[in-house]
Length: 393
Image 1 (cartoon, rainbow, N blue to C red):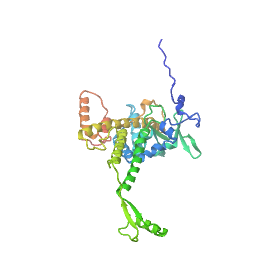
Image 2: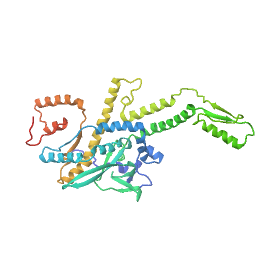
Image 3: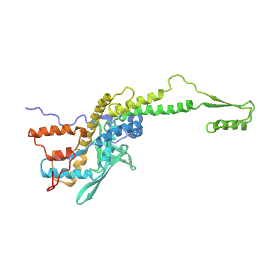
Image 4: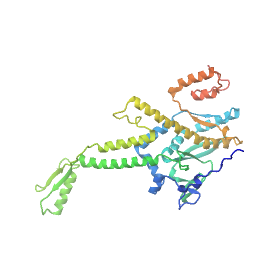
């Protein structure tokens, strides 16, 4: 007799005591991020990180590397109906700014999760997408079942349920099993915080040591109005090339003295920027070669970055296939079908420079008798598929 496995989930979110707060209803989860809980702030703390120049530059590099690649919608089966459904999905995705929507969703790399509201519209008897607008992650919560809840003026703490098939959610990480994901925000927070304060002290240093402090001296018994006049003269030195004061008063410049290296702040900020780059790109040489960098090393580091990009592309494609693509098919082709028969969005991983090697491989497979659909060639090599009866070469 075969041993039957336990089919029920035992250690899921419903039984995770770290996800429930005393001030929340039992069906609403709190973000388990330790930093957010220790600071008492929400995920808006991580949304502020997106304004740091280094975070923005590195994350933009990571986003554009995914969004800039070609994509294709592959049919879920070999039947003509499957091909027709895949063609419709591709046409629907091309009909709106799909690149902007994917760019917004990829902010989940830092935030843990990101939502985009789908603006559906009817046209010619079909359901299309007018727009996918990214929404701030700080406006949402999740319940114990992983369903999205929207914080509104009337429900600012618990949030209310949202309509089904309305919000695309992209979750990054999730090793903790939380629907809030596990973004890089907690790791990025301290490098950004230290860099922000280092820049603040650097500005103080530049002000103190860039221009000397002016000292005005007056003899005892000088009337108050004359003292004020001397202070006005001291302030004028910062803007004027000439001033006048009584002969009995004196002005001196106090030069600031400092021991140690003067590039301390520069070195610290460079180090922190490097830590940010390593967190977001896995390396630093593709953003800053530095004094010890080399072409070979930067090429190796770029390969590391490409591993990150491939993983992002696969995660994003999976999220879109489970939600947006499936909803689009269900609205327009309501016949019941198994999950395997839904079309799949596929983001090409090879660059243009790799097409020659890919073509040589495909030619060898054809000689070996491997059956490959013509749609693959047109999509992979970016060639227009000829219409029925169209003259071909």
